[in-house]
Amino acid sequence: MKCANCAHVMTKSLTRHHYKECGLNNVYLDGVVMWKCRACDESELEIQDNEVLHQVIAKAIAEKKSRLKPEEIRFLRVHLGFSGVDFAKTISVKLETVSRWENDPEHEMNLSNEKFLRMLVLAKMKPFTDYETLQNVTKKSPKSTARMNFATTKTGWESRAA
Ligand SMILES: [Zn+2]
Image 1 (cartoon, helix red, strand yellow):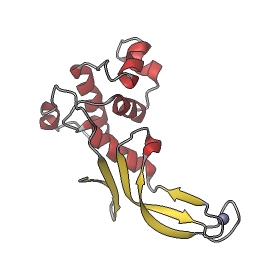
Image 2 (image 1 turned 180 degrees about the vertical axis):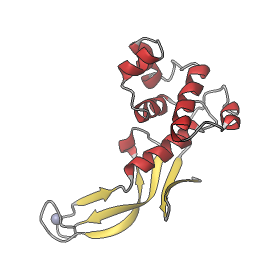
Image 3 (image 1 turned 180 degrees about the horizontal axis):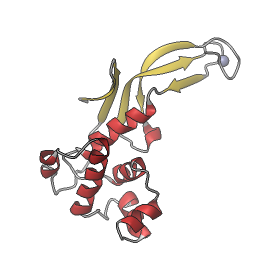
Image 4 (image 1 turned 60 degrees about the horizontal axis):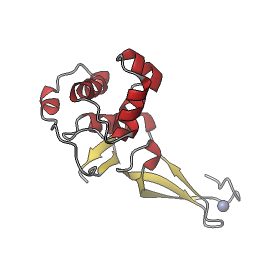
């Protein structure tokens, strides 16, 4: 790979990346390819199998034991392919309501809606059978968001213990 800035040959290394670009602040990726140019210091990140990665992240969020944070609700909604407007219409709430769920930590999505959202994500991959995980979701909101790690393996992206 050649540097887009100065056309020098870039060197490749594997790195850990804080994946803020996905809209979540607590997602870290291991084994991401980093291209660096020694001549001009330009660097470029290469995230492999992006679609699979998002599937794995969405599953990890949908299976979380604690309540979803606003940015996680947005991540799942976008992952399912809904615009805010379509999502609001589909579940018969106002667009402002969806906007509050996704932006205002004080304005919690009710637990039934939240679980339906999780079920949609989990059912998108296969017929839904994982009842126990969702039955264990707690009613309380967490004070902080636990870090989530993902890593590339021979078979693709996997969720890893932090
Ligand atoms: Zn360069």
